[in-house]
Image (tube, rainbow, N blue to C red; front, side, top):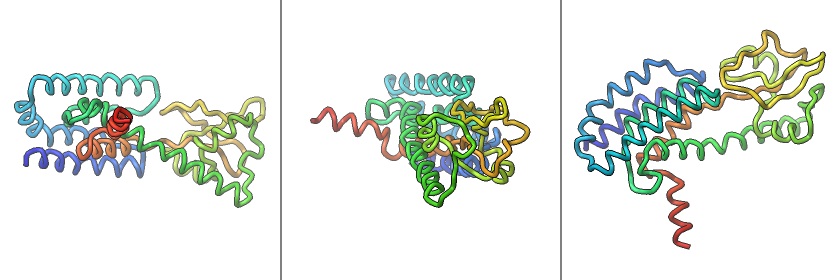
Length: 239
């Protein structure tokens, strides 16, 4: 009963965080304070019940959530909200059965990565749809064939108006060098966008992946089924 209450209480807050991240790619820091405050009594009661092995796994998981999350944020791989999300989930999630599920933060992060695999496929479908409609998305942009191929999976071609009105969702993936537009895949989270986009009706942008949303999905999977990758590992060992 307490486990169910703990999960439901955390999901109530995490659902709002996922919604905010998906809509704006921003989550107020106060959300994580509320999450920890709401979960604290349940976490304290659960810690008392844990055996020494599970308690050690929980402590290591919490440490990994903080250290790995902070490192990824410092390197610009993801944002501050993503770090706070993983760090807080590392505190409120507990070990489950399975090699990876034993460490909640690893389980959640792995589940989130698996969930995010679909994102490049969605970008590819959208870009191919533009090409099918006759849009000349690479016109005026210099890039090698391999870079163009990768762009179809990782970037999005939008109108200048959409980019200007939704800058919180995108980073510009073009640079003007010597009067020439060049496509770039090296876009860091939080990098400063140019004041003005290139002189074109459409531009290539790098969508900010709603990774807080992915982490929430990873948490839901962990508390309901554990780490998805554990099932694959179990299947491979039985072959």
